[in-house]
Amino acid sequence: MSLDKEKIKHVAKLARISVDDAKVESLTKDLNSIFKFIEQLNELNTDKVEPLTSILNQSLRSRKDEISDGKIREKVLKNSPKENEEFFVVPKVVE
Amino acid sequence: MSDITNQSLNEIIENVKTKKVSSTDLTKAYIKNIESAKKLNAFVTTTFDQALDKAKQFDNKPNFDQLLPGIPLAVKDLFCTENTKTTAGSNILNNFIPSYESTVTKNLWNNGSFLLGKLNCDEFAMGSSNETSHYGNVINPVGDQLVPGGSSGGSSSALAADLTPATIGTDTGGSIRQPASFTGTVGLKPTYGLCSRWGIVAFASSLDQAGPMTKTIKDCAIMLESMSGFDEKDSTSINKKKEQYSKNLKDNIKGLKIGIPKEYRVDNMPKEVDELWEKGKKILKDLGAQLINISLPHTKYALPTYYIVAPAEASSNLARYDGVRYGYRSKQGKDLIEMYEKTRSEGFGDEVKRRILIGTYVLSSGYYDAYYLKAQKVRQLIKKDFDDSFTKIDAILTPSTPSSAFKIGEKTNDPVSMYLNDIFTVPVNLAGLPALSMPAGVDKQGYPLGLQLIGKALDEQKILNIGYAFEKNCGFKNEIKKWWS
Image: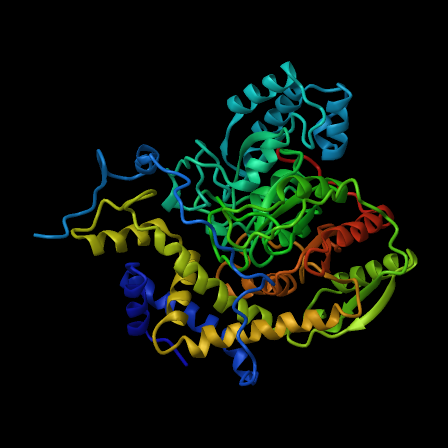
């Protein structure tokens, strides 16, 4: 399989990263060499292998569904690049 | 007293306890070292005033019964520290000041230590040379053109240069053990789930583990004891009793069975790495351990598997950096989508973008089975290799890295050649096992090389014991000239 420039632009769109046309060339080269390396896995027959979904020999714990925290709006908003008192502010979404 | 900063953590603790040095004088000694070591670029942030306050508080009301009494510690800038900037080596977090403390750093502070500063690292811990950091390359104290390893490169550099008595890093594919090997220091990646991941900037959640980086094995045991433990805020934290690794450290390894995997001898490996491995085997054999040849047949597939699993998880984890709630936001972007795209393009560096794109691609519709599902299956086979071997052995001995520290810029143009550096460390992360890198010798250029001990899950005490016995009989001494000050 090889990745072409169009495909890379599409994946970049999915990942919400804008990529300059100037950079697409080198990115295509790098990603293709990485995928060539990754595709060594195709040598292995894994038809009868169960996928490993957790490395731990324990299932996820459950907890009581109750509030353990709260009333920290100021702390939560403290690091926002742009805030308006009680809200996170983003560029206009609805006309 | 002679220079206290070149002593081991254990010796320093003894000196504090016997009042040969105050916490304040100790802290001042490290601050002096740090200020004269700016060339190494190991620190992103220093917290000297705060550290001196804490030291003074300790000296006024000392509690010597703690594990880390009055000890200043610098930590990797991937651990969130309350009210102290935490960047993860990235531009996208260049102004992020957490309002909470990571569990492992909180554990360290609860044992009497305090923060000296935040250490440089590869951006989001993605790198093997510390060259992907937004805050510049870190220099290896071993030589002024050498990388300190990565991603915990600021940690290994600061430790080897006596800028902190011990430190902590994170290890997703070798990020503690490879820099330890490159700087002649000790690094341990614990069993997945032993140290809480809560409050650590996430890279690949099924692989990430925090662990100690120290000058000696005893120091490593002390730090692990302090930082580990169950945490209900981490859903994959293992609920078990805390171990006393330092108290239980023993150097008798008679009768232990050490596995030697034939797959860890790779093409183009320098002769010295092989010779050092032989030396390590001989030392353990002379101490009464039994060497057993084993096979881990899927070893060569570990790195390709890792480069599907880790980027896939990273692409999900890093989706949170959108310029809305915290971190960097681009000034460009007319609408919401464009603001996201510009923020992420300007905020992330090239290696992080590469990995997000790989991850997005392997998880995208139509490719999931071919890549991600395939990788999960091969991961099962890699884990099974270890499970099968550990029915007949106690631990595994391998080289830590296929080479010693390389020059800055030597591998930056070829991502795959950079990735190959982690060939011996990655399998352990995929299988969730503990592994220790310990200094063992030098190559013909005089650069340090490490050997790796891999244990069964939760068998940290045993690999620390083997390392302890090895260290006493290896005769390695890290001789670093302070050329930078």
